[in-house]
Image (cartoon, rainbow, N blue to C red; front, side, top):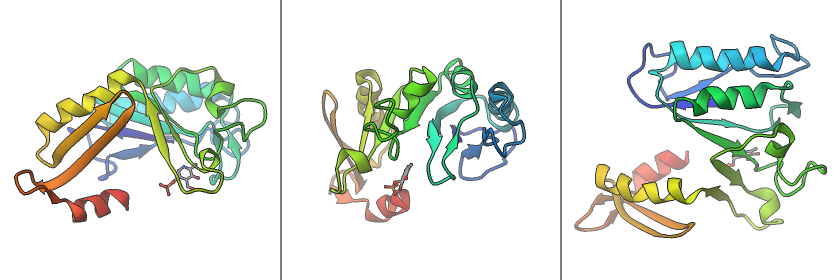
Length: 187
Ligand SMILES: Cc1ncc(COP(=O)(O)O)c(C=O)c1O
C-alpha cells in the first residue's frame, strides 16, 4: 500500500517519493483487524511524512504477492477519504484480482464500496497474452496535454477519449527517443 507524494517534503523519509503505510493485515498487522487505526496511519504519514500534497494512493483490495491478505474492515474507505480530501488520486491495482478472479465481484475494490480514479489491470484481461491497461476518467486522461506544456521530455501526446499515447524524447526537434529515461521508469 503506497502513498506517492509530490515534492517539498516536511522531512524526507523515503527518497523515491513512495511511502508505505502500515499493512492493514487483520491477522498479523500491528492494529489487528481495526481498519480505522491503519487508516489513521495513512493520515499520519500524509501529515508528517509529506508536504501534504499527495499525488496518489495505490493499493490492492486483497494483497496477492503480499500473502493473500484481506484489508482490515473499514480501512480502505477511510484511507481513501484522507487522500481524496487533499486532492490525491485513488488507484486500485486489479492486476491479480480483476476480471472476477475473486469470484464474488468483478473488481476487488467493489468489496470495499469505494469509488476511485484509476484502475490498473493485467493478467486476467489477456488470458495469457501479455497486456496491461490503466483505465481512468476523461478528466484525468486529458491532463496529459497540459503535462506536455510543463515537461520538455514529453515530445508528443496523442489522445482521443481513453485511447492515449505519450512519447518521451530527449530532443523535441529531432524527436530522439528518451531510451535511457524510459528504461529507468520501467525498472
Ligand atoms: C498485483 C500486481 N500488481 C502489479 C504487478 C506488476 O506488474 P509489472 O511487472 O508489469 O509492473 C504485478 C505483477 O505480477 C502484480 O501481481
